[in-house]
Length: 361
Ligand SMILES: [Zn+2]
Ligand SMILES: [Zn+2]
Picture (cartoon, rainbow, N blue to C red):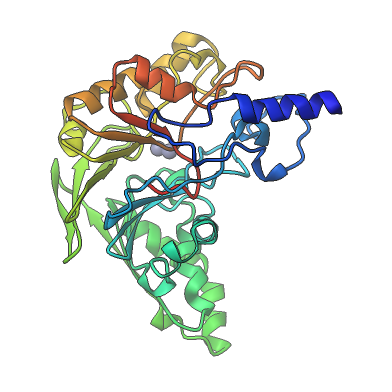
């Protein structure tokens, strides 16, 4: 027991918990939440090393510039495989105190609540539910959209409604239509029970740009959608947000190199993006049995660190924030910063961070 405690405390103290070379000393390296942990004997998607609390080496942090009017809030940084410390992919850009959501992965309301509880009044006002009116969906894979029923339906029984505009690829309107149909029993009951779901209304808009275009604009932000490549999906978009003081780009899921993602990312202050290990791809629990099979499958779905570094260099991106990381390895070799190091080794010289749920950039 003493040995175990020693190992854990060394892991906390001795490791560089920073996720980027600019990270300061204002972070704590902790055994996450002091949660108990018993090492699983069998590897299943429910027990991969990236979900072990002993491999989560720091608490969430606010790394946003003190004076910035534009802040990226990492709501859910997880993969499809369940991880109790990471919700499904979902992010928010808060501009002048108003939130814009990007993707609605599993647990989206809970991740918003978590971000508020971690950061207090810094986000409490911004995430006042009535302000949560706009969502952009990068693509219709389930891990990025499975939170949508909850996002839309949960407010039906609240004391006030929320109006939501949902922008996404072709198919988004249908998705909302079928969500409403699937939960018709519930909404009918809500009306009978005296609630007023009519006050809570979501409207979906399909984006069908051939290449790119402005999808949304108000006094705080201009949002452009850029068509990207992501395996066999025909319609996937990256979103480029231009505010009064920052350019922030959310790539959604990646894939092979393509010129449009470079155009989307041009001169971005922050690129919120994903990557999958190339060095340790043999440990990926999907994509085929051989290394060749895994490479030819997985690299159609996700950016390799080399592709990501190339895109970021060509686009002159200042900072990369990694989310939705696929950081595979054997138990003993697992390194929480493995993908940061792979992207760095591939030649990206800007700042790069491995994000956690609740981080602010
Ligand atoms: Zn995807
Ligand atoms: Zn995904």
